[in-house]
Image (cartoon, rainbow, N blue to C red):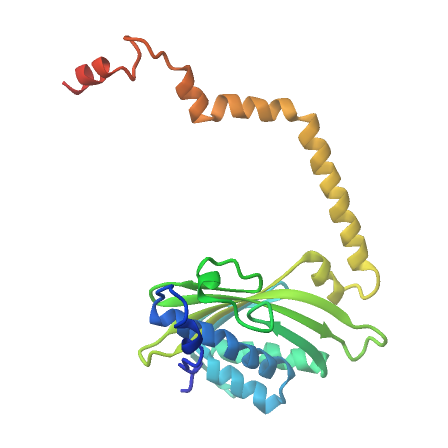
Length: 261
């Protein structure tokens, strides 16, 4: 089964840095560039291209998490009529229905935040706005920023302009290639509500969030004595400062030596 390619075209640019990074790091950098094409193929490709992307890049027991639906990972099962069913098959059904609802989707994937990839040192410090790689022993995690315009065909004159962050958990198999084990789509409330209430709901959420900020600020000011009380009673540094420091204090060397004996 094909997988996300193990291509090291970006290594030459990384060698100019004084930072010594593991080989897997360079591979994941390149995966970020390739995963952008995978996402476009899943959301904008023809049905056959969409199916090919699912079968190529997702594990057979992959899982999918979205605010509106979920596919748990499970081992393949065999059902009458349908034959072999996997969790990857259900993921394909979700993307298939996604294309039915919105046949034309405008999508922008930001794997590196800007037009050019940042330096390896910048990536190593994990300060990239739209792309982060976390190295683990057997799995790697990608966070990818996506901007899409979703237009449901039976709702005229409306387009849902939303931003989301997609979390991809990649698993490296014995062939040394990475496959998608988990996809999790993360939406802000003001973006998610655009799928339910076409006009004006996002603005109402924005107003509610701003009002909630003022409520939090007011509550923090009114209950400032409680904050002071927490600081004075729960801070271990304050508790240590209150301990007696004389000869009879618990921290005195004489007492420590006597206690040790």
